[in-house]
Length: 71
Image (cartoon, rainbow, N blue to C red; front, side):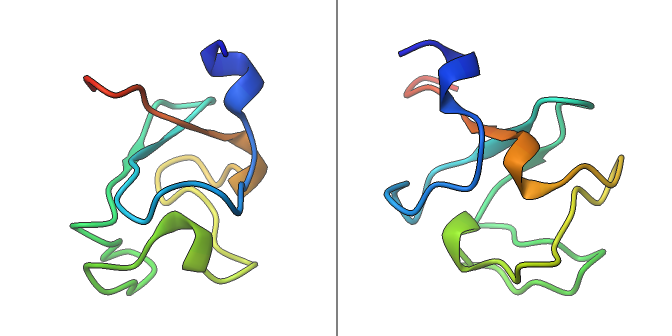
């Protein structure tokens, strides 16, 4: 699977998977959470609120893709 086939909010993504914005390349790391949206550390991407958007460019969750194993 290529990175571009991996876009969108996926329910089967591992809880510790890092997700990267396809617009600005911001990385959502569950271990860090998101201070802009007040998302606590340890929150998986799949558990983010439906209205959560990229804190850097305001892209929708569907614009995010899972980073590869060695990212």
